[in-house]
Length: 353
Ligand code: IPM
Ligand code: MN
Image (cartoon, rainbow, N blue to C red; front, side, top):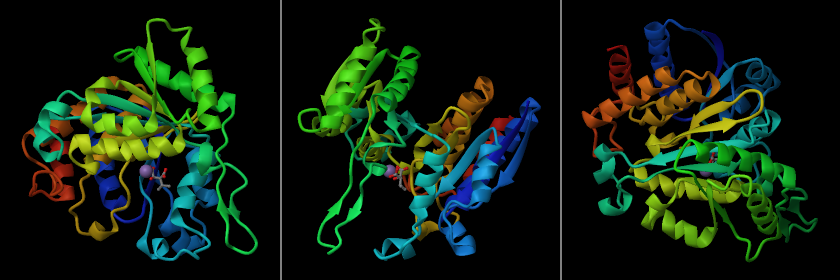
């Protein structure tokens, strides 16, 4: 198979973790006789520094003309500590998601037996937890208008807007996932307070009627925030809006034991993007200590969802799990002794053998 992959390393640890994921993909090319072309683009603080724009047109063109996008991380503390900064790295990510129509963010969460001790949660609670968060990614309070400040600067506002159509397309995705999993969708909302949540609940409940074999449960986000770490095994597919999904997926990462383990896919109708859910971890940048597994697992999702290469994808997942089982891990997991590149090298070795 011949495919073009846009590679956007981004900021902080982005370049070093992306390097490991590209190594893993190259090993897959070799083992399964595929040919992937990697074209690199700028995004985030790296793009602001060079071009003054966190999502340059060239990057957009590159992404639009690729079969899939592999993305590292975004964010730089020099902007976080400057509330007056006009351009921020994160705007690049939001603009890319929106311009490429990446409406469905898929974040699988599971507890790995080898890492169960790495989680601060009680083992018996998290054992066998395995669910996927399906987060709406290009609407809601992240993008709603109006947003901004009053003229005298004493009032600030953001607006949460959802259309039925936006809710429906992400609901379809969630039900597709549920069909191939344990056949349960849990909608998380705040329908006791928010008008948008009531539209979500109405739309999703109506849609679910076509699928009597899929169980639909509607929960409030606040109590679900508790259940996601006290009873994580009750979830199969979590369907939710942009902001709730952002928060609940970081919380859910505690189950896995390290934020460095969670991959994600952002699916659109044309091209899709794959990235670890963690950020740019600037304190670790350039030190060769960051966990590359989430990014490598994101490459596995890329092979599965964008290219339909199931065996290849499974080969990467198995190699990562083998590394975990054999203690080939970075310091974030059980005080692992391996560097970013050493973990990447081992995973490459396991893919090839
Ligand atoms: C994420 C991140 C982003 C978000 C930031 C970096 C804009 O936290 O992908 O979850 O809030 O969506
Ligand atoms: Mn987030």
